Figure 1 (spheres, rainbow, N blue to C red):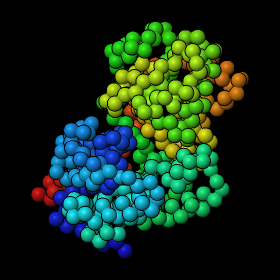
Figure 2 (tube, rainbow, N blue to C red; figure 1 turned 30 degrees about the horizontal axis):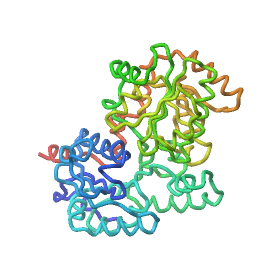
Figure 3 (cartoon, one colour; figure 1 turned 120 degrees about the vertical axis):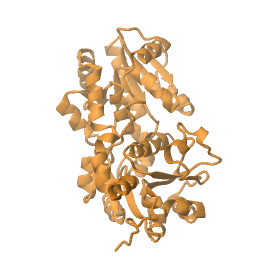
Figure 4 (cartoon, helix red, strand yellow; figure 1 turned 180 degrees about the horizontal axis):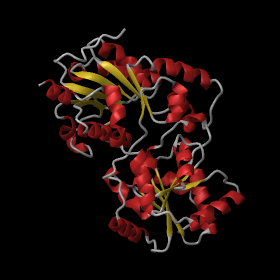
Length: 406
């Protein structure tokens, strides 16, 4: 039985995001998923705090002012140099004992986690000071690590899934990223996919013209973008091959590979020689929208594995909000079924020669307006749409309770 001071007046903060595993200065996931989620909750009236990794991180290192988001309720705890599960566990436990961290967390009603190891290392200590826990299941964590390393799944991972589910449900509240995941892990309090900022990611015809001019694309040429990392599970090499095969069939097709600067040489090695239809760029978080606007389609390929059937790739919301139709594998979380229902985007379910021929024809014939994709993104991938989910999980914000009691 959890004992909580959730209703006591000494709580001044609704929720603290405890993410020491993420570097606030350099981690794109921190900016797109953690900091943007905090901003959305603040807009809903919640008072938020933050504990994140990073060495000598100041507010100016971040995409937006940390003070402007959480006031003085934050702590940076140094670089996370852990490489093994045990090191991650020890790091989180060590951080949870820091006096500055405990002052921030123990002043909150809830503490938020997105890492299972971080949760297991610190949840008991925080619960002891009257804080309830929210675990946000962003994926099947052990499966993801396994697939990232080996490129496939193992039948024994089903047993690990059960163990993970039992550990996750030690949290007071559980969120996850897809309905399919909710059906798998059971007893979920709410589903919120990986969302994007609809202001940062938007249709902008001026940016489109500038980016196309920089890329040397003509007005009548069709653009496809891949934006993301180069981990094995992201199928970058297969994406490059698919795009090259499509170039042969559609002369006016152009492709942009948007990857980190340090990954460019690896991606260039995947590209065929003498392939002028390809462009490769890198971008800071605030510049991604410009390059996405240059394209007409965004591509997301995943293997048909359990880890992907329950997933919510971050780039999907960003693509859609910028007006891009998706070219996606079947069975990616909830989105593949949504695309089929809405008729927005294309499903790349057959990468044989015949399948690529058909996909090329569909690309040329595709005529849905860009706004149709954005409207789909606004419907499914904007956090403000999930206010009722957050209120179910967190209750009403403290400041609204305060005003209601006066």
